[in-house]
Image (tube, rainbow, N blue to C red; front, side, top):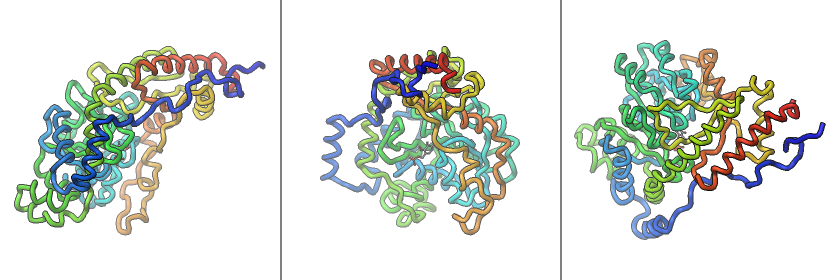
Length: 420
Ligand SMILES: Cc1ncc(COP(=O)(O)O)c(C=O)c1O
């Protein structure tokens, strides 16, 4: 047989070298100037002043002024720990969260000796499946965490109904969903508290950083106590019962550096433009993928705004491509010059931290409820069949590349026998 695919050492179809997704964008002169000035002004900020205050104020505006309090942290993980502490999660409580997401959405709750109960996800939204939550509730369930996965909002109507009916706390992890909306309402404004990671890869990035948002004064006060002892606690916490802890807080220091705040402030300024480019590219990509019968593009209803649109992960339908294994398909696509991989990470039930009954990292707790992998069939399916593709955002350059990607998908189908 005369081979055509680059899999067999032929010339790749795509000539543009990797990476095809260049992130984060470079700083402009304004940002560099502000970073340099900050160096001689103040290299560490204790209270709510300077670029920290500016970022927190700008973030409120970004959320249409629908949240009263914004509080920066040195990472999204820290902000999540503060959220769990602030809502009062405690030893033996149960927190329900999605089985397929980044672990740090939930893992910090282990630190409070809370038991994490994993719930299956929905194939279309990739978020926690609200229809599977009620069977997991017990008298110990205290809270639900939704992650608006890859920028797609969770099914908030049903989730709000459940939290109201059972009087549960709701945490939103918006680390993928800066600017995403469900029926016109911004992600981050539904829960008791919400967190946005601002880590380098995120649509709004600080380098390392996170921001907690809430309308609840007590949650804000307790989160401040967890990570911001001294000046900020003394100046910001009005409740005398909590203010008396200002000097020590709860013993942790999880503040953002002013340099990270400056980077985040400037990335926030550019967000709208990048979002528009990303939507143009990814809607086009999604539309064109409908021409490929072995790829299932993600479903986006008309009441969904994908906002940051953090990931682009269609499913590979193996049975439509003669059962060629995903790894082999990925290798074939990579050899044609595409930037593609399997999404990193496992379903959380298979991470050691979540899996083991007796967890040697913590001396005196054990998981009372081992995750039941059989009940996580959609998480398993998505994890085993998703493809991770670039979240293009430069329409002028990337449209051509998207067209080339589609041609490669077609070439693979036309020459599938070379992969059998
Ligand atoms: C859904 C989700 N939650 C939490 C985090 C943790 O954020 P950070 O890396 O800023 O600590 C991430 C980071 O990738 C994430 O994707």
